[in-house]
Length: 270
Ligand code: ADP
Ligand code: MG
Image 1 (spheres, helix red, strand yellow):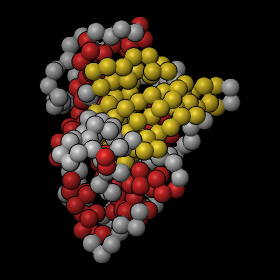
Image 2 (spheres, protein in one colour; image 1 turned 90 degrees about the horizontal axis):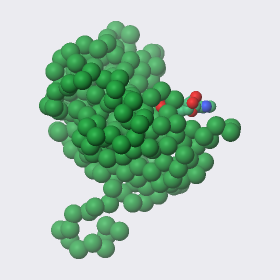
Image 3 (spheres, protein in one colour; image 1 turned 120 degrees about the horizontal axis):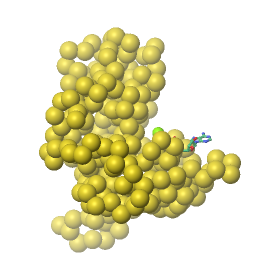
């Protein structure tokens, strides 16, 4: 426990851990005893083809869905019970795949961004200023908080969703294929924004994607999910350069032969 450590000793307790998370839909096993660790300030990617269980895992981790078995630990403590769940939900943001579907089209973008603040009773007197700051921080300096989502492009809408994910000042953001519904020309901009925000705020990311090319540019660790099982895990370098599992090799074979080593991503994406 952190409290018993001598002062000055850095904590090694992971920010987030999943232990043996299992989920079934009827007789179908969507997740089979999945373990996962995210350290503070790091990027862990979960990669796997469509249907492998990535979104189900993300939804369980943020409490949108219940696991049949297994535990989620936040800084070493089980996220169990109302209070622990609320506290955890405040420290984690979520960015979904489709920026339009993940917001209410009848709400203004200011209301969208303020949603988590209201949910956690943080929308105080300086609420309007906070919304402005959040929009500015995602490159939406010119945007009116009173405007509606349909007035913006897909990339701008995803920026609004990222601002919403940052509203409670989380230490972890779970991104579920945040660029796959966007035009290719916009994908690199959104990835670069996420990298900038990580550097500025020391965020940890759990980054879900089916694209190993993106994985090798942005992540520290990779977990390869195949039909609900983690079949391979390791550093991004190792998993993408010398994959051990045939499934990982298959994912890699679908990619262009070469890609830049730089973590910053040129536009448009290769
Ligand atoms: P991914 O995000 O990797 O594409 P999902 O987590 O969305 O995969 O889905 C994993 C599997 O679980 C899929 O086969 C999907 O059909 C199934 N599944 C997901 N949600 C449900 C649900 N609510 N009811 C039944 N099956 C589901
Ligand atoms: Mg999914």
